[in-house]
Every structure is written in structure tokens, then in C-alpha cells.
Image 1 (tube, helix red, strand yellow):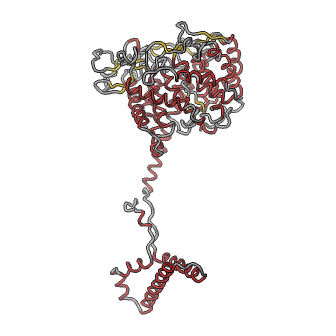
Image 2 (cartoon, rainbow, N blue to C red):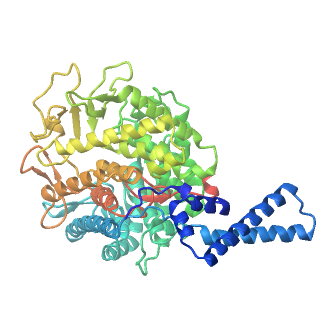
Image 3 (cartoon, rainbow, N blue to C red):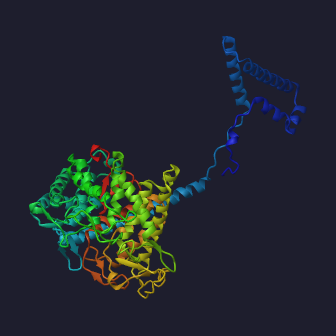
Length: 625
């Protein structure tokens, strides 16, 4: 049974004299002495005399403080041994620390094992979904960028580089879906080089995060980067996969993508690249997206690390160095920038489309290279300033129930506030949590006294926003979030456009306009649930993730293979949109799988995920300098 009187003081050593004195004053000892025989009485006297001599000699020895001759040393040894003997006779054994009864300890162990098996089974359900999504792509669209699951055919919307194959590869490796790896790798080895050399226009940003990022992650996870692969926590079963091919393809592709930097008159690259002739040009309006030009650095940095060629990192990092010098609004930046002038264009500030991953990469690039010294601390400072600006200028609460959300400033800080929040903004809770603890748990960060007041505020905001992002799902009839939501705030009279789930307590807080009701199988919310679960260890994030996964299974799964986007999440049955984005396999299912899995798989203090969920190891070598 549990010892409720356990006290460390019970281990304190008592002197022999004190033991005997305490014993003699008890009635039991007095009674024993009255009834004892002469021999026993003499024995007791002898013990008392011996005790007196020992304690007297010990005190004389201490008082004289003589240690210079052998007699004193012998006496010291005698006292020590004598005390030890008496201790052995009279000292009681120490009491054990508190322990659970065997039946309770067994129940706790059993409960933990049941939980592990529970989440293992859910993780396996996500793997089954991945296999189903891949089967649809393989059977109907192999070699195309994306699957159209309803019409059972493929489409090229990302330059024709087989984006789904490359985007899915590291997910298959992480899940241990070896049969899919062995289907994807031969296509990459035989087809991708030719396509890179012959294809025409691609978007710099999309190609970097999906294809280049996918190749680099596959290189690492297939044991190409042997120095850190053991950190991934993934049991390796792959045989015959030559990781070097991924590195060679990454360099071939990146050399062509560098033309976007070389063709621009400033440090800001053009948005589009023509692969076959190594040329590049700006978008039709002449502008680049702020998010797009600042979301290339993780990939190019790691390529320099493993190739030994610093040119990739040099070009990409000049973008952030340039943006550092530009004026900002409390750390916040407009969503467009001109490659011709190098200046921001317009005043539209938001963390949704065209703005989102700028803020994500500020902290992630710093984490990726934080071991390189102080020269990149400016990125962390830019991130901290931006998050203070978010809290001050963009964070509001809805009415009547007080959901915390992040709005927009379409006309800058001097214009009106818009209570509009893209689903894309739901990356922010995970980024805030990662920025606060740098990948370790909140508990460990507190124990090590690592959290600043800003970190604590950001963690609180992260948890509040994660709840809002989940409620954007729970508010709808299907349990799936719309692409964009608006929030009721003071002075806003618009209403009647709810998500359809009348049982939600937030039915009056969230507005979903007709043009915003589609769902593209996006990953941002489950990404944040994954990071927050790793950081806080709160099981509610797993439960929320499971509810979202079940909704995907119920309303987006296509029997013939694959999953489809939806046109309206507020209707049942929801009208379907004939497209499966590559990021459903590359991001959404990967984050769900990791959410339900063990925390030692792709640990957040050893890896950073690019904005397409491709894990890249934190850099330690000279190329990060």
C-alpha cells in the first residue's frame, strides 16, 4: 500500500546514545528490565558501558583534534568501526518511497498500453487512406501532376513533373509503405530527368517546395545523409533504393531554378522559370508574391549542405537579407513585392494567401541554421517583431462566443480591419508553438526556464487559434472547413451565412460566404494540431485530428481510388470538385499519421518541415555559416 507518511527525514542517522536513551524511557523496556535475569541485566550494563566509552572517546578525539600520530589514527578507526557496529544493531531499515499497489500499477501500465494501441490503430487507418489515395493516382494518373478522381484521369497543373509522385515519396517512406516507394522510385529514376530538361514553364515557389523539397527529403530519409538519419526515428526497411539519384536530380532541377534569381535585376527572383532553356520571367503583373520569394530558403540551404556548393544558399538567403532592410508595419509586410525595384507593392497585409509562409520561414530558417552562430539572429528578431505585430494589429475576438482569430488589413495599418481568415492562416498555431519552444515540449522548456514572456503569449495565442481552426471544421454540416471564413465582430451586422451545423455553440460567430465554401483537402489545421500535440502533449489535439480525418473519410473518399475536393462543405451530400491536390498525400495525411504516432519519429528539435511538409534535418556544418 502507499505510504502516506513518507518523509525524507526518516533516513537521517541517529547516534547510538540517542537510540539507547530513547529505548530506556519506554515502558516496554522498563518492563523487560524488571523481568530479566541476572545474565541479561549484566549484558545490558555491558552494552551501556561500551556505548559510553565509544561516545566519550569519540568526543575526546574530536575535541583534541590530534591526527598526527598512529595512535590517534587507530583510535579514529576504532570509533568509526564501533559506531558502525552499533548502527547495524540499532538502526532501523529506511522506509521505502511511496509506491502504487500492484493492482493499481498494473492498471496504469495496462491503460498506457491500451492508449498506445488505440492511437496505433488510428495511425494505421491514415496509412490505409494514403494507400487508397495513391492507388487512385497510380491507376488513373501515373506520371501526371495530379489525379482527377471522379473522371479517373490525370492533369498537369504544376509544370508536368509528376508532382504527386515526388510530393508523396517521403510520406510513403515515413509510413513504411515500401510497396509505394518501389513504385515511385523507378518512375523518378527513368522519367524525371527527361522532364526537367524538356518541360517548359513552372512556378519557382511551387516547384521548389513540392518537387525540390520532396527530392531532398527523400534523399535524407533513404539514408543519403548518413550523418543524421538515425535521428528520424524511422525503421529502415528499404533495399536497393539509390539515394544519390535524388541528390543528382535535386541539383539538376535547382540549377535551372536559379535562373529566376539570375534573370532579376534585384535580389528578388522572378516568379516563373522555363526549365528547358534556363530562362525566367516575372508574372504577368510584374510582381512576385512575398510569401513565394521568401519560402525557398530551407530547400536551397539544405541542398548547399549536402552538395557542398554554397551557391544555392547564397542566392536564396539574399532574399531575406534584402527584405530585412525594407520598411515594415510592426514587423508585418505587404503581400506583393517587385523584382524590378526590390520594394513592396501595395499595402495589403495578411497571413493568408501570398503572405503566410514568409512568417513561417523566418523562424524555421533560423531553427534550421541556429547552430551557425549569431549572424542569422536577425531572422529570429524579425519573427518576434512580426508576432508582436500580429497580436497587436490582427488578433481579435468574435461575438458572441469569443473565438480568437487573425484578420486582415487590406489597406494597411491606417485602413479598416477585415474579419476575414483564410484556412491557410491555420499554419500559424503550429508556427507559434514551434517558435516558442524550438521543438521541445512546453514542460521541458519551462523546467529549463527557456520561455520568455513573448513565448508564453505566443503559446497561449497558438492554443486559442488552434481551437478556432478546429471550430471552422466543426461549424459545418460535413465537419470540413471552408477555404475562407469571416467572423462576427462588434459593428458587423452581416449574418445568416452559417456553416450548417446548428448544434455548434459557435454557429453565430462564423460566417461562410457562398464563394468560400469549398474545401481543397488542405493540411494547415492538422499541421498545427500535430505541432501543438508534440509541444503541449495535450491529447485533445489528437481527438480533434481524428474527427477531421473521419470527415475526410466520409465525404471526400472516392471508391475507385483517391480523394476529392468539395465545392460546398455546408451541404449534405456535399457537391464534389474533381481534383486531388498533391498536398493531400504530401502534407495532410502525413501530418495526421505523425499526429497519431510516436514523438520520436521526425522529432521537432532535430528536423524542420518545409511549407509542403517535407522534413529536412537541422544543419550543423560549415555551410550554415
